[in-house]
Image (cartoon, rainbow, N blue to C red):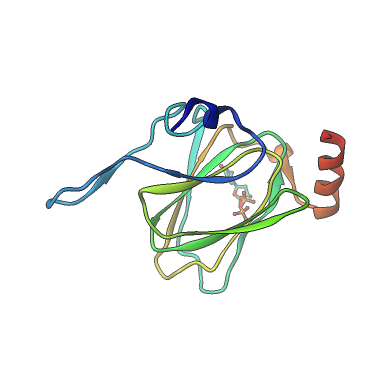
Length: 143
Ligand code: TYD
């Protein structure tokens, strides 16, 4: 990844991870501040999602995250307050970087999908923006 890519902080983008292909099975990995532009403070995962369910549907004031479909597939819809974009995650050797201040929803989970989320912060309930109108107000305060 280019150095300048590590410094941008305004929009979500896909990041390819190293992939060691091997007849014994493939291997990928991610290192903080090298493949992703933040230090990892927390890791969580979402699994056993019933068909048709959605997760997320909120924004973070501070938290940056990197989402990988370790197994199966799902979509992540990101919204910066003016533009919405859908990313389909379906391989374990790339993920979606989402900076702070982005509304995001995860949907269309396949059976047995496993979403791994690497986060730049410890869990903090006060970092969540759950109301879309508050999110838009937050974005206009940022400008
Ligand atoms: P939440 O982030 O609201 O899930 P989603 O956005 O996918 O719907 O988290 C669901 C619950 O889990 C909420 O009560 C807080 C708790 N939680 C933690 O305690 N620690 C964590 O790291 C996360 C991500 C959630």
